[in-house]
Image 1 (tube, rainbow, N blue to C red):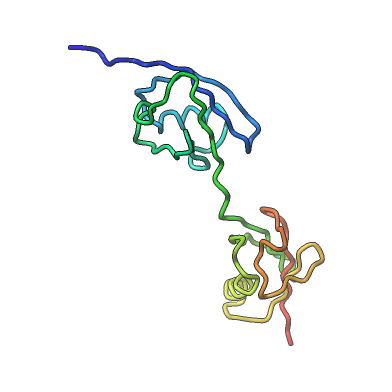
Image 2: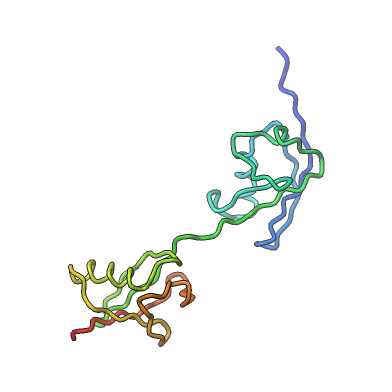
Length: 159
C-alpha cells in the first residue's frame, strides 16, 4: 500500500488589520480548515473571526491548498471579519443596569422600545444619553460611536 504523498511548502501568512506576518511550513494536501486552525493558534484569534484569501479568492475550509494551485512561498491573507454584534450597559435612572445587545445599524428608537418592554413591560417614553449627548430616535447607533460595553444612561420620561 503506497503512503500518502506529502508536499510540505513554506507559506507566508499576512494580516494587515493586525499588522502581523509570519511564515510556516504546511502540507499542501491538508485542508484549509487545518490551516485556519494553525493561524488561529499562532495569531491568538478566534477561528470564526477571520477568513483567509489567496490570489483574491476566499479559501473554503474543505478544500486543500493544492486545490488552489498554491506553490512554495505563496502569500495568504488573513482577513478579520467585521463585527456585527455589540453591547452596551444601559444604566437606568434608579441606578440599576443591564446589558443591551445591538447592531450599529439599529435605530435609537428600536433600542428604546426594546428597553421599555424589557424593563417596564410596555412601551414608554425614554431618553438615552451617551457621554452627555441626547440620542435621537431616527439616528442609527453608529453615529454615536458607542464602544463595546460602555455605559448609556436611560431615563424614563413621565410626561
